[in-house]
Each structure stands twice: as C-alpha cells, then as structure tokens.
Length: 113
Length: 117
Image 1: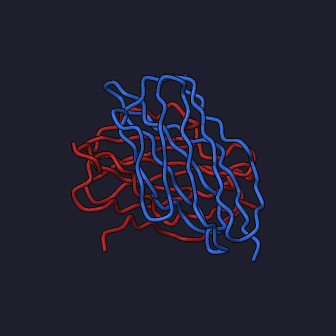
Image 2: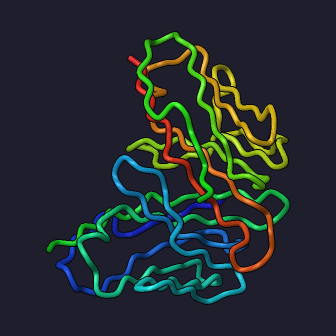
C-alpha cells in the first residue's frame, strides 16, 4: 500500500526566502507525481506533474524534483511571496493497470510580508 | 477554460436525509475520481471510474454511499442516510489517460462542502 508523507506539516517564512517542501513515498513503482496547491475553501490546483522517467519540472518560480529510487520529491519555491501562502500537497500515481492516486497530508505554508 | 464542475457547492442537511452530489468532468476526460477531505484524514479516495466503469470503490462505506456515472458528462455520489460523521468536503476530479508530459494530470473541482447536523 502506497503511503505518502509530507514534512513539515506547516512552515512559516519571511517574504523573499527560498524554500523547499518535501514529499516521500513508500512504493517506488509510480507512474507520475503531481504537486498541487490548495487555498482555503478552494479545490486543488495542479502546479507541476513529473512523469516517472523525468527528474524535474519547472514552472516560473517553482521547481519540482523526483528521485524515484529513494522515494522522494521536493518542491522548491524561489523568492517566496505572500501570495504563495497555501497548503501544498503531493500526489503519487501508481503504475500498473489501475493508476491509483495517493495524496500526502500537505504542508501549510505561510509567507510573512 | 475547461474545468470540473461540482454541485452543490455547499449543503447543510439533517441526519438521515439523502444527499446527492454531482460532478461534470472536463469534456473528453475518461477518468473520474471522488475524494473526501477532512482535517483528520486528509484526502481519501472514495471511488474511481475509467470510461464510466467503476474500478475502485474500496474507500467508500458501501452501506450508505454509492457512486455512479450515468453518462460521460455526469458523475454522482450519493449518501443515504447521511450521518454527522459524513461532514466533509467532497471533491470530484477528472483526468485523461493520454501520453506525453501533460498526460494524466488530474484536475479538481471546487468541492461540495457538506455539513450533516
């Protein structure tokens, strides 16, 4: 059974700081890994998707890396802004005939102006 | 701008009542997920459909929950009878099993916020 863990559960940083969010998973037989953002009272917004054959993906100030063999992914946010405050979740899609998606519990980020 | 549409957005109901939540997946998407989110459990997968066929509903309490896809444009999640412990946000998501770098991206609806009193 795939288990996805995100550490830390909460993070508070001053504006402008670079930061790293961590995601670890127990079963390395994955199809892809996706990072989402969730604002309070809202649904989940996809940020980046990394296929199992890729090592990283970049979008603007966001960079996500994937080390499948060690079961880890990181989301790097450069020059953080107050608008980045949200909960960030990683989701792992398992390979195989049934591509089940397992979510981590999320990291709640607060960027202080 | 294609998006997953869920109704109702908010629902308050009394214990014992039937609740039906609806989801319109993005046109052309062939996979649909139902998730429940609570503070204690986080996001839990309730049901998963591919090409309208249920592939996994092991996360769903079978005695009171049911999920269906009457057609490719509508997915429903029904709770009967509802209980206070069902209070949560219910998300529908859709995706498409296509290849390429963007294949299998999952798109979420805004959620149905359910309170059972």
